[in-house]
Image (cartoon, rainbow, N blue to C red):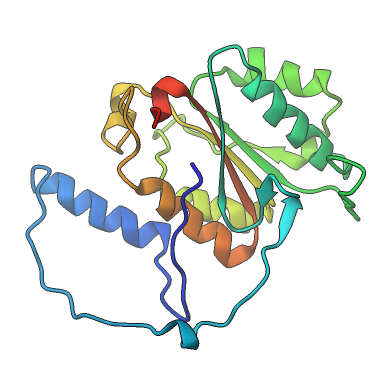
Length: 212
């Protein structure tokens, strides 16, 4: 999911704002009345160029969305857990990655149990679990456009957010269908990361993401 949200000048859209619009669509039975939006043009001469900052060059950039995609059993989760473990201890991901301190990580999985799967696997990698957090979904399931994502990033000062989408019924409301691509909400999640310079990683099987 390398998709991204355009953020130019002061044109920012928060997760909360997108969530409000999305909820309004559901309240209207899945249909949104067409509204006329004033045309605004931006000349490329008005855009200030800047370099991409990298957590792990050339794989994981800051402020953008990174997809780890593959077939079941390819090791997507193992890779992400090892990345999270190294960052939590302040270790670089290769000889060229230099960290000055441990980084905070948010690890969100829709299908793995925290106590019997995620925690044991993190411990096996030697992770510092004090620096790895999970958003509590006991009262309400998390969506890609949930305002709690942005709140959690700001609260923990996380530099990496791993978000593993589920294809269950609740997720299909937000654009995930087996064999189909998302309806664009991936971009909205990226907006918060760009504003505070952190990375988003999402794991998908080919079934979830589709093929081109």
